[in-house]
Length: 195
Image (cartoon, rainbow, N blue to C red; front, top):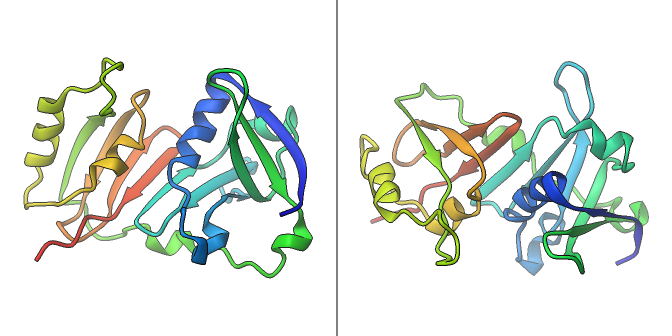
């Protein structure tokens, strides 16, 4: 791949990139989903949005903080994420347009649920890492148990939401995407199919 602009992020902006990077695909046959996709936001005030998905979960920030565009020069296109040399830093590199001009990013907007909301709750992230204080498994068990119908969720997708944000959760049914909302961040998680 040929890269154009490279940007180093730390702190709060790096956390936002990490949130997006947690949903990119590692499937080589879906090469266009291995990157964060940046495009124009349709929200009032314009700006940019960023989305990533592997087809089973999706992370979206809409709109991105203006610093991404105004200070760092983030532009629409495909961006790859690399770990920075400094702890907590991330580097993103924009793929050159000639590399990606034939790519068609999935229509991520059509996977947003529009059925009636049956149940709402809140969720505070957790992690399996013992070095972090946010591994309260009893809260996690209660969160999953309290859905009106049995809903199978891949815990790695819940962990990918991070431990920093409080989420409002919309449940529309055991086979419908769960929607997590925290300010300008949105995540969709498809439930696992159980026989």
